[in-house]
Length: 117
Length: 166
Image (tube, rainbow over all chains, first blue to last red; front, side, top):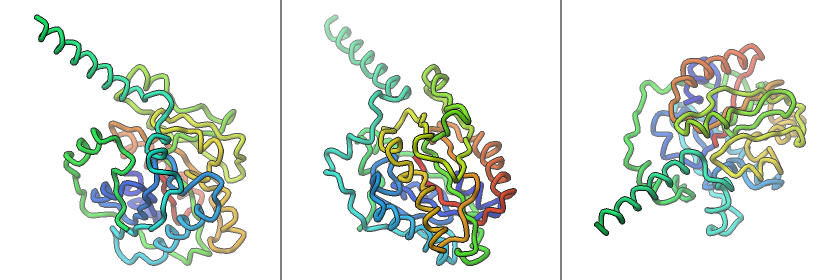
């Protein structure tokens, strides 16, 4: 969304994302990384890893000749998957997730009540 | 390697996102890089909900708690001389701990100052920007805050932007 707005106003953009699936909306340049949310450029205080991702983005800016190129970066996330898939979540559920969980709980309680009656 | 866009999402949400139609918008905008990168001014834009403590307010998380289908659409300015200790985060959908430890994982100001010194880029912009990425409705981004951010960067004669969503 923002990439498109900026590109339309005459600024060249490159997006680094863990969700290249969504670049199908029409993103000018995409570098895809398989990293957890909130860590698009790598692991904290890992300068070589951050530099590697940034260099991929800068190269794409220089080399892309037409819109919608997606380059996938083959870099493994350093944490165990079972740790990483939980670790990016906020300690407290976001308001929308909290609301959905409360609705699901209410629906389950109503189902139980209906079954008892 | 084929990047799995859903690797870190809970399964319930993966099904939801895959079932949603993706609306392609034509034409896809295109601005080729106008000059060599080592002469270009680069700005950083993230949606990680970062702000500079004491300089600007956090994103409005209190309103989002009252209205879970609303996300603050405004943006904050992050100067190029920002220090890690000045960084605040107000994004209710990610664990902000690692950004508090090292902002460069989402807003790589210090990496880009190094790239400027090395001559890989011309310069890092004076002002970099942060939005907050939870936007159930992107109308205000598209019509108001996105264009405002673009004008600000054009005034600073930015050539290229690195975007890092969250």
